[in-house]
Every structure is written in C-alpha cells, then in structure tokens.
Length: 292
Ligand code: ZN
Image (cartoon, rainbow, N blue to C red):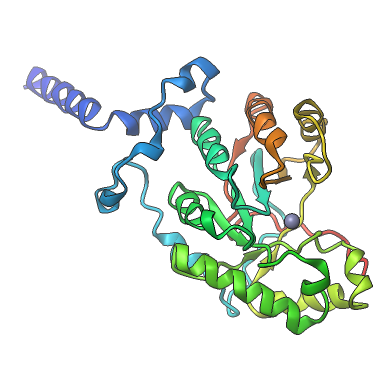
C-alpha cells in the first residue's frame, strides 16, 4: 500500500513537472535570484499567445483581487505608515510607458521582480504596455497625463483634470482607476510655487480625501539627470539602513542608461536579501516634507 502511494505521488509529480514547467521555474526565481547565464534560458514571456489569458498560460497566481483592492476608494484609509517587517525594494518607475518599457519588463521578469509604474500620457503608441505590465504582476500608478509643471500645478482643478486624464488612460488598459499616485517632482517639489503658491499643501490632503495615496521615495537612482549606467548603479546602491526601500527611477526614451543599470541594481539588492515587490495597500507610505 505504501509503495503504491509513493508511486502515485511520484507519477503526479512527474506529470506536474511536465505540464507546468514554468510554474516550477517561477517558484525558483522567487526563492533565489537567477544568475545571468541561467536567466538567458528563460523563455521570453512576450511570445506567449495573448489570446489565451483565461487559460493562465504562465501558471502564475491569480491576481484578479487587485482590481477591486487597488481601485481608488475614498472610504478606504487603511494605509501603512510603518512598512513591512522584511527587506523589500519597491522599485518605482516614473514617466513611462516608452520605447524602453518592454526591455524593463523583460529584465524584471528575468529576475523575478515586481515593480510599480507611475505612468504619464506622452506616448499613446505604448499605452498597451500599461496593461502588459499590470498582467505581469506590476502595479500601475498615476503620475499625471502631461507631467508639465506649468499645466499640472497651475491650480487644484488643473491638477485633477490632468490626473483624471491619465486615470482614464489607465482604466482603458487595466479596467479601473488605481489609487496609487506620485506627484510630478514629488510632494516636496518647489517648482510648483512658480505657478500656484501653497498648492502642494492643499493637494497632499485632498488627494487622500478623494481616496488616492501618494508615494514619494526614500532612495533614488539619480537618473532624473543624465548619468552613465555606472553612476546610476552607484547612486542606487549606496549603503542604507532602510528595510523598506522606495527607489526612484525613470522610464523614457532618453533613459537607456537606466535600463542598462537595472540588472546590476537588482542583483545588488537581491544579494543583500531584499525582494522586489510592487506597491500595494500594505506598502510603506513614504512622504517627503512639503515645501510649497
Ligand atoms: Zn516624473
């Protein structure tokens, strides 16, 4: 009897291994970072048939719970000011989608990383990558449509008109307007004072009253300015005591060096025992001081 049971278990394991080889791989990728040469062997998920979403071709966990949980909701105030008790990097990628987004997504997949994209409306030809990023398990946040300081910060109404515009773009791609936002320039920006004195002090409260939550960052890749990949890696991997890192980087046509730096940044933190997770409602709320 025992022999029969063991045999049955072995057969089931074999069948599962044959039927779900990628599921087995995903488990390994989460447990320990892939070395570069191993990573090359990972099938390119962009070649998955897009028409078979309902079949869950990648064998990944069901993430449909996010649709209701992440939608903007003025009645929810259950934010986490203290963070989570494990080493996590929340990689936040601003200003996309762009022609670099696909490369970023593939790097994230290769290392088993999740991230958060705070998107803008600049590149309609890449809007479909917002949906693609979401389906791959990343979080989509709003960064305003125009990202033009003069427009966005000319008045509170103008800010919301711009936020709503990107909210509708995102809704078309993922089915709802997400609650996660990032202010252009961060909540600590001083440039908004050129267009509307005191507007950030108003917005930081009013966005939360409307059910959004804004996320600043506690570490930066420095890629807002022009830097080489080596310099970006240097900024991004400075020694830190933070257990929860919200790391700022950018995704636009000119940010090729960020794409180049990303694998080394990921490898650095994975070697230190950090996991890369997408922002959700349990993520540490990181706020800068308001200067306007
Ligand atoms: Zn930005």
